[in-house]
Image (cartoon, rainbow, N blue to C red; front, top):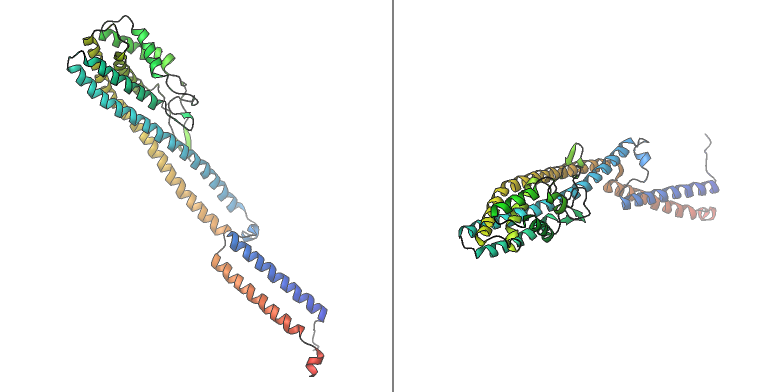
Amino acid sequence: MSAISLGDLAQSFAMRRQNTALKTELNLITQEIGSGRVSDLAKEVRGDLNPITGIEHDLSKLEAYGNAITESGLFASTLQNALGVVQSETQDLASSSIAASETLNGAMAGAAGTDAYQTFKTVISALNTNIGDRSILAGIATDGPALAEPDDILDALAITISGETTAAGVSAQVDAWFAPAGGFETVGYQGSNTALSPVQIGPGRSADLNVTALDDRIIDTLKALALGALVESRTPTLAPQEQLGLIGQSGLDLTAAQTGLSTLRGEVGSVEAAIEDARQSNQTEKFGLELARAQIVEVDPYEQATKLQSAQSQLEALYAVTARLSQLSLTNYLR
């Protein structure tokens, strides 16, 4: 059989082509090691991009849920903290108000009224808390405070109770002012009657933070506080003993309001627990999807290192062969 050989020019072209192919392979491997991802995803999945597209879609949804979970969690914890301040302040005031009224010392009325007034301001401030410029108890009117200023509320009440000379008369007027369609809804509350809509925090999961300052349990607390706060300077027509009676009634009403506040805080706590449960579920699902995506689009660094070493060895061998071939000549052979 006759041997088929390559001419010098053809052999040169073949060597160049192989050199280019090895360099291209080296660059590709180096790029994949640097990025950690396959360079040709379509080739990796044999043209079927549906799995990776589905994973990316699910991850995008989880990211949106994650943002909603973070915002809802912050909103719920802020609300819980505000209600905690309200309950703590009113518990302390309830005890001191009852104690002051039982002394039957009319001089105690002014001091007790001042305490009630300061607590009233603290509670209003807590209920007007906002997070990220969003009021937490104003319904959908999140761009403003839920409640009017403490002095504005008390001034409106002072007009309502003017002329009353007994604790019972003042208490009745205050009850009417805080009743539905009364002065509180038109003067005291500045938010919206429409509560916030539930926030979707996962498939079939939602966080319902629809509490407003119109909640009966909050109104009962404010009404009880107002009874005592009015004594501070807005009940000049009441005798000291009548003022003490108002302070005592305020303490009793604040004590009764604690049950409602505890229930309300429990409801917010349940929402907080649901948000945390959704957070953990979201993270678990996200981890699983990211792992599945990594198995498709990410390269094995050890495998790539082996390929890199193999391609480098081949290129070095090619350089060695090329160098040896370049030294061959008939003259050297005949010597």
